[in-house]
Image 1 (cartoon, chains in turn cyan, red):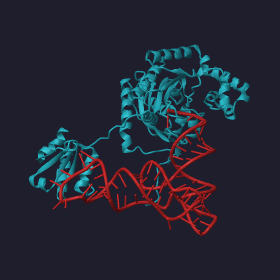
Image 2 (image 1 turned 45 degrees about the horizontal axis):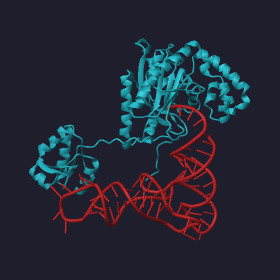
Image 3 (image 1 turned 90 degrees about the vertical axis):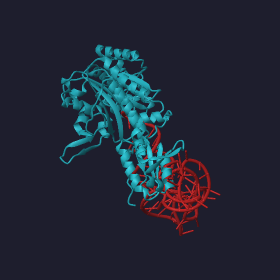
Image 4 (image 1 turned 45 degrees about the vertical axis):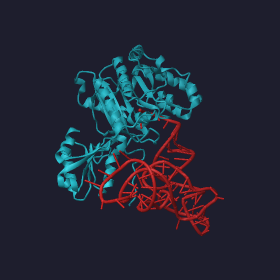
Length: 420
RNA sequence: GUGAACGUAGCUCAGGUGGUAGAGCACUGGGUUGUGGCCCCAGCGGUCGCGGGUUCAAGUCCCGUCGUUCACCCCA
């Protein structure tokens, strides 16, 4: 053996035994998305770097230190998609979707790439399911988007989640608030850590991300964004809450909830799971009324969410989910002697042509060994062919659950595949 | 990027104060010549993450490195 190569740091293989649960979770979510009128879109795995630097924001951690950026052979700067919203917004603009009936409701299921230090529930490549609704400023659609996410969690049996809700305000009220917060931070500078003082300059809202106890205490007295909302934003926020109540979705208003993308305006939200440890966010999102314009489109509002497939599965398994059975063949065909191998191969081909799931041995196993495989495969029947059957053109059919066995004509055995 | 713990067969792990490796599961064969799931027997399988160092001798001690896990940070 040569030098062993393993999967890159922070990545992992999704093995055959992991597939059923995963595919089921994704399928359940997609079904919910479609019921709410969202249609699937797939965008490229990499985009021009400036889509993210402009769209997500230069001050974000994602853009500053987590992107997989490379130069292609044509000298263009490309970046592996670190988040799902900017690419979908780009596609909306590129395909002139503003000419369609609004809102345009889209969903995706794609891998995301971020150069972070791996941890429980955090990988350098992970999958997100997400929806985006473009073109409507109605608070009802904010509530619908949150409702879609809540319904998706319900559909996969994920319970005990906590929804946190906040409003970031619009460009205008944020400007007013930012300066109020900035002057507060300047006055109280002594109470904050160095990093917070740095944040105060770049993007004062990010000081709310700080986990240092002293900073948190000092922030308790800070002006609240929700108290600085303009009348329009305040009304919007109020209406979103009403619509959540109407849908029976409980939430906690959290004025410190500031998410990692700069494009959010007004509504932001996040579902958290108590069983996930430090990486408690299962999914979240918000409204982004300035994003489409920022990446070169007309001013079109939007709202959406992203949710992590790995986090859903992790939360599910930690709250005691049951494993899903893998697919089993209907029949495993056993050759009891060397001469029967040709016949067994032909039988398998005929039955598979009729649509039956069939398996057989390619390892020169003994008859006993093949029977063992048959049992292991989960097949309903073992079809046994030996010298006797060869001579009579028959097949012995053994029901692997009951142990009942009978010898039937070859054609009858083949037909088993058709009815199964 | 920072801190802590860990890294022995495919998997889960044993290997007191150093003396050149074991178990269970899995896999293959067999248990009277054509039969599974239980049981019994045997076999296959390890440069003890990698590289240095200390020592007569290191899986076992020291340093470095890579990786994993947990936490910080941030997020899905």
